[in-house]
Length: 348
Image: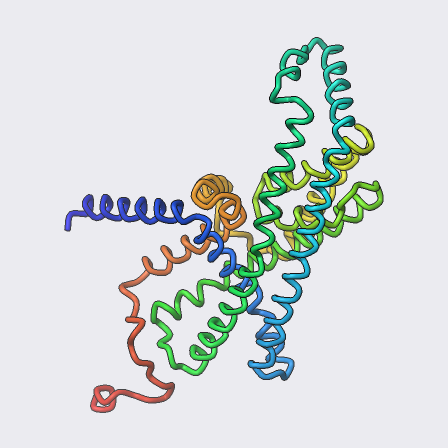
């Protein structure tokens, strides 16, 4: 076949696949998120087995922790969001005062925004209704998270069984499933380190917000942990809600302290702690990160933004893995136990 035809056909297939993923973005994103979380948890299974527990008992412990812990966190987040929705109307007067003070401040330096802020779109009541609607949508997403943890548990069972079969030699080393299972290691390393960095950042942010007296500090800490997976802009997005809440509750001074504190904590984690754990760096450039962020967030929404880097790393490794040599061994090929030769090899 003409190489140009191959490129055109491959491009058309990619477009069709991505269009299908976007059409089913909620379902695809849900499955990909569960897969990524299950891959991230699997090292704990191996650690428990090394400590002397049977694989079945270790798997049961992890599943219980995932389901019980996940439901506990989801319940806390849902309760906090419900309380936040009830609290928002109390900030209407503060929002009006902040709007007037901002208008006065800008008018002193020659910037007149009075006409713009007087429009109906910037009415404090309207803004609070929009915020309430957004939080309500997030609350609905949290309420369905129990299915996510059940799916993660089922995937853990499958991954555990697959790894056990691979260790016993029941699957050929060069088969497609085996090679895909090996590719997961690099992605798992990135996710594990990013999760650890996100946890440290979240702890620092929660401590700062508690000291300042900002409401729902733990909720914003969980939010900063999740958005830590979004490169470049994730920290900025996570900083906006506590900044606005501090601004409405306490004024500009504490709001600016929140911004400065978040920036310092993120810089310390990213520039001091993270390089020591991720010494090898990532096989992905800054341009690739931003492009992947744009593409996957367009296809899968917010979940796509969170999963952008891991998905891109996985795709790159697949392309690299299957382009370095010839066609991989068939996934249905029978395994040959170690030390056993075929009749042809014996005859030679």
